[in-house]
Image (cartoon, helix red, strand yellow):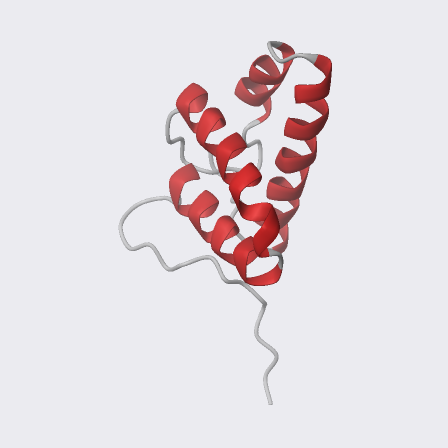
Length: 102
């Protein structure tokens, strides 16, 4: 039996994976595993989406824009937003969403 690489990133034909695609998939997975956490994570990702737009995902995602966004938040907001962002980035890496292309 062949072991295939684990990835739940959807097959997106003809275009790169976007922030909106990945955040929706992340929230669906989060809801499945821990539904009580979805609303807050969704709110933070929506605010980040308003700031970043809907960029294509790459290995560098979303460092520059996210850092500027985080800098504008209060200290308690930064703590919570950083936690959601770190979890989202870990999910992107684990599930094969990030590529080496910008």
